Image (cartoon, rainbow, N blue to C red):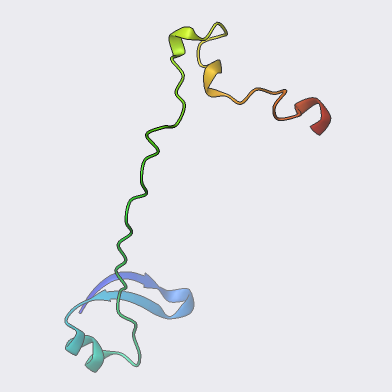
Length: 75
């Protein structure tokens, strides 16, 4: 077995090896779990904003309007 990570505070270790070797060498173990997720779809009809059409400070068009967020009331 190859020790990948040691966790001495809790007496655990992450090891790499054949499952048969792991079974013979340790009291108990849990095999890695592999999960693959589908990528979410893209909403092609989402509204867009051309930054060149914005009249404020550069980068401001990326922020939510403070009136929409009720910022004065939040304070």
